[in-house]
Amino acid sequence: MAIKRAAVYLITSVCACLVLSDTTHNPRSKFKAAVYEHKVILPEKSDKPVTRQAALSLMYKNLDVYRTQTEAAGQQNVDILVFPEDGTYGMMIKNRTHLSPYLEYIPDPLQETWNPCTEPGMHTDTEVQHRLSCLARNGALYLVANMGDKQPCSTKTDPDCPSDGQYQFNTNVVYDPNGTLIARYHKEHLFFETQFNKPKKVNIVHFDTPFGRFGVFTCFDILFRDPPITLVERYGIGNVVFPTAWMDALPLLAAIQFHSSFAVKMRVNFLAANIHLPAKRFQGSGIYTPDVNANFYYNNSELSDGRLLISELDVVHKTTPRVKEALPIVNEAPPIVNILPVDQISHQTTNGEEFKAEVFHDLFNFVLVEETKGSLSVCYNKLCCHLDYEKDNSSSSNNDMYAFGAFDNLHTYEGQYYLQICTLLRCANSSKESCGSSIQQAQTRFRYLRVKGTFGTPYVFPAILLTDSGQLKLAPKQWTFNDLVLESTEPLNFPLLSANLFGRIYDWDEDEDSNSSGCCHGDWRLMLMLLTVYCTLKIALCA
Image (tube, rainbow, N blue to C red):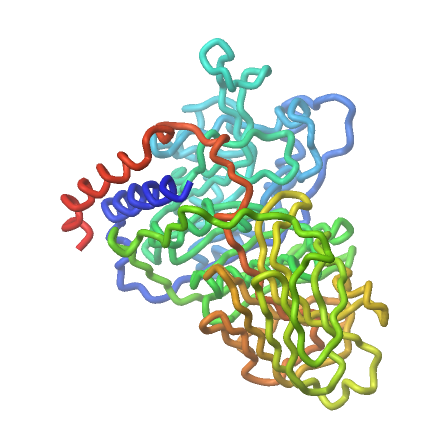
């Protein structure tokens, strides 16, 4: 598996070098970005599929909202606007037959050039694409939206073709300011989306603008190597557009919390547009930058509406790594990952008695944070976490209880992926068992925090999550992240819910090679040797 990954790394690095557009070197230094958190209008529940006309009627209602927001963005000279995942029809249709009337055939822009606004007759039943294209054209901006794609297939020629004769994909589309379709992305990591098919191979999708190169992926994808990490590390991505229908999962995975951490760790501008359904815990959008800055919207009131966020951003230019720099450290025999029984988890602590509590269905090792000021350590397997802290003087007058925890194991709930986590969090009450429960209230402010750990991965995503009477807050410009160390630079201006270092060891995830397709199933050692020769001949092109 490691040799396969190295060979793929060589292929993608060379290709990226050859196609890197000159537009990423444009001298433009600023651009205006917008995301819209959309209070999606949902279809009524039905025991049978609706007609295409009924589906269009519902989607037009949502697109009318899109039009209003696009016009508002255009009036403020926005360059790029992102709408959320499932924004045209909602996320509740789990039956693929029931979803079919909402889908459209979306052509591959790498295979044909199409402007749905000016050429509506080129493909039939593409009314939604026509409207989206015209929004981009009339607003003179890049527009990113999410919708459903149907691709016809035949069971006679394709053994993987579904019995209904079409693939259905959760799809992001991107239109340029003229309304031309320039990118199409099929979501790779589906989150219990039985109405959609997983693509046969990972879509690595990006597009170039006068203000930088943008990568495209969706929601659950963010937790995995492909496509997010691949886009940033191998394709010169300095910006990400991210339609999402993200349900908050406190204390580690609230939308604004984790999406902002990706921007900081991967050094990209991150444009995240979520749907707005607080009753179902869908909320939280933002425009996040590498320098721990954020323009975000979070409102969990069921009576609240969506919101358009607009920010002027610095252009982030990245260069694609040279091939000789691109090879990862290959571990031919990674450790066998086992889910350890509680009584076999190694640990060591200082200044505190250890206990165990569940965080998002994983059992962490914790120590209480009892003093007003101090240092603590806690370990789990090979990960040891260290905390230096100082609470505000008023902390002694409230009943907040905090704990500092560590986790180093395979997460197996709603997916399997390997995590290494250090977390300082507020417990729900005075019971140790409540540490790790979802909670949005706190009263304690911290004057200083410093969190670090002995991580076995460079992919560590930092976040500080605060609260203002139950409304989640970030801490822009109040902390730094250097050498995998999270450190506050000033007293935090709201009470603390959590401070996390969220590490991912992608190579230790469940092996998905059996689900891959294409040319890559031969002798990888031979392929690697041939690619090395090829890259030696082509290296001058990357100079």
